[in-house]
Image (cartoon, rainbow, N blue to C red):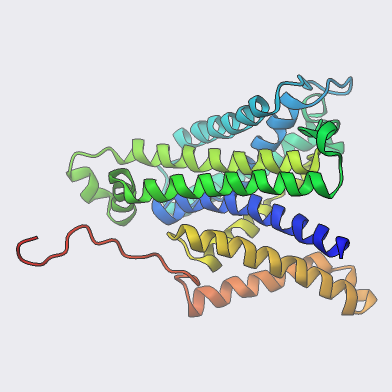
Length: 317
């Protein structure tokens, strides 16, 4: 029983962390129409900088400043936002397809830098030695994981609440106006380039928050955690859940993460031994088929974006 509970806590923690990243992507794509193919880079920036700032000093590489946890996490969020600002200034004038290619290239470059810059990130060995917050009080067992899950859920609810209020605000309507017809928004005196950059930086900072929580949970991060496949997974979550709908983004994260872990378990248990060598590849094929099926038969996702009517249209209103 304890084993099942431990696994459920582990599953819910990772699904909630990924849901935060999906909410950031939903702000960029679902609300603003920005195709970010470099999610893994911003997620990784949050994870690496959180561990560098909050980790213990080590001889092998720079960093390990042992800052208070919240300050280290804020540094991770700021690093993701700064990276997004630099990338956004260079790429947001591109069309959707070119923007996707450019940001995907950023993610690939980020992973390669993390893998080779041993003086900064520990290289392929990754960053270790991160002191989990309140570890002395809670220990390393189930109690700690439940407490950390509570923290992650609070962060998820806060991000969801802020994005819901933002979507209902005049700024949210402006984002959707730019997504639907940028020229029309410009004709009304708006500055789409500035608004697009704001949405891109904000969404990427939210991904940095998810990365910082991920690094905290494992007390470790390596280049394997920021492979481009992470971008693939988070996009699948948003497509299945429903772009433009924050509830759909969260539901998609839990559904795809559940399908991912269940398919991995099923393949390891029932597939022939020869096929188990290719479990990871088979999982990607299955998730790819889910994405293709959703795009063909339900492109709006399981939870479509709700239409927002600003005026009733009735006489006298």
